[in-house]
Image 1 (cartoon, rainbow, N blue to C red):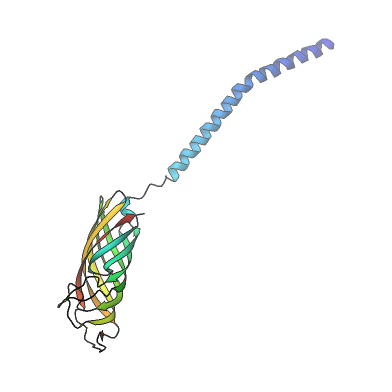
Image 2 (cartoon, rainbow, N blue to C red):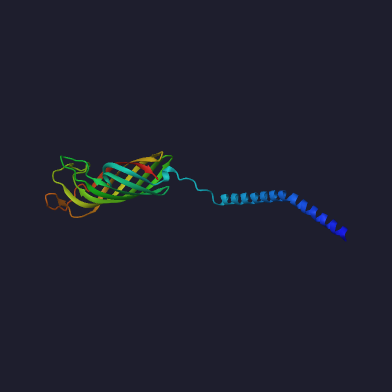
Length: 220
């Protein structure tokens, strides 16, 4: 009986020793299996949901300073352009018109606001644009450089709503952009027309004018 107990004890010790000796190998195998399963799962997840790529610079919204002659934002302004999708943007602008003295007239800045959806087509860093929109603000006749009689002595003033159409070309480089554009606007509604001398006149002259402008700014 004693010999049997001894043999059993020695057998148990050998089994435990073998188990202890094989434990590191078991742990290594288990760890390798875990790494393989995890890597496979991550690979499957990457294939199912690819990592997002950075938007092209030309597809980013941008903010710029505008200068020009008789533009929807006047002679000096600012425009934020929201790029809704690669082929559609919406420009929101504010500015001041009548910033160029003509015929000895003193400056009388007229506030303006504008909105214009535009189609856009990118060719590398160059973007072609075309759009139609609305603008509004105080309008002083004869003070536009494109008026039939620029700087005329008798000026008329009103609040006017314009329908505008334009085409332009835009170039992007290192987070900056420049856009040159030209177009035309026509008054589609206005308030009472008043002379600066106090009289009124319901005949609005120069209610359709061309314009040209340049916007320079930064993309986001």
